[in-house]
Length: 473
Image (cartoon, rainbow, N blue to C red; front, side):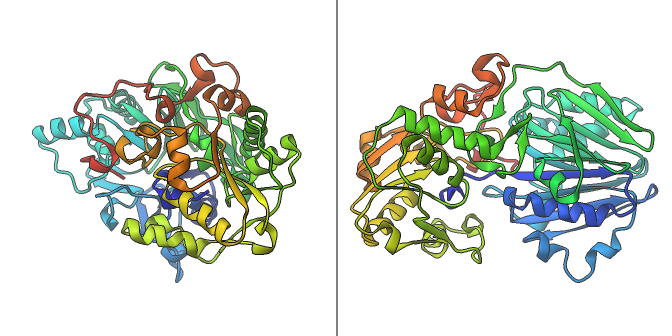
């Protein structure tokens, strides 16, 4: 639910289309379906086969592309991006897609994820004469492409991508092709679709549903797709590594109507709620979910436990996501702006409050207090994921472990801190089993680093935590 208030935020969403007479309007609708992945900035770059043109700005998709700005973007292909920035990464210069012009041609890059060795790469590139215009790790990719000695863009891209460590779902647009790449671990969701004769790619399949496109398949780890007027060609820049897709995509980030590797997010979250009810026993009168991402889990918990589901919390749809506010104080005030308890539903009741995760605990504390102020006799907080104990280096804005309430507090201590009558978390094994991914090796292909502290890629000793990164989106 309110991860956006607590500091648990997805970096961004990417979209690309090739071979459509109106790529900008289609990209605009695609970005609307991805708006939940980033609300600080948006951009679209279009090519007509000769030139690349861009419109981008800070704010929501509707605001960035108002006043007929889409009419300036005529062509046959586009890449697009919605953005959430961690500390130090704000500013129009960092809004993607990043557009680069040179005597040998132009290219635009949009990227979801985080390149953990970006700082080291940047220092090396600067020693070779590169001058960076942004604080985005995405710009590193462009400089690596330019420094490559290969003549073919495809070979230059393969060489550049092999140098990257971390999570990246990348789309690169030139005058004559669209390149699409997924990191070797497949940490970020990325799918390929078809809209009439056009090819489309997006971070989530919900974008395909909105534009009326057919889902073809997920982009594979280590895969490089080359899309042009001749169609789609698949090559590899790397052999697949141990699969490690971000588990929080299933738990929180992705839209309920999206599918990741064929698994529907809403149904996965319902199974998480059912598994949670199987693992714990609570004597209560009603179950309520914290809008929006916890509703599915709350329904599943209700079905498995037999405790009736009620709408005990109402979300104000006319308040923007409070994580874009510049201070923690304003983010915390946003809880009361965004949520209201339904007094007639919760008064005198023993309430099971289902949420997707707890980061700092400040939001959970305020919601528990709101429910009790509205007359709830008891509030039992149940979380449809394990405790978040470790920072993420792969594109989620989780701060240092000292800011994660579960890093140095027991469940009993956390329960006391948030003022709940009880607090329960889903087990790691229960979470992995409930999501239902096929057996793809360790952890069924999940990245569990934020829960277990075991990272799927090497983390350099000098790697800085997300809020300290030299290069952030």
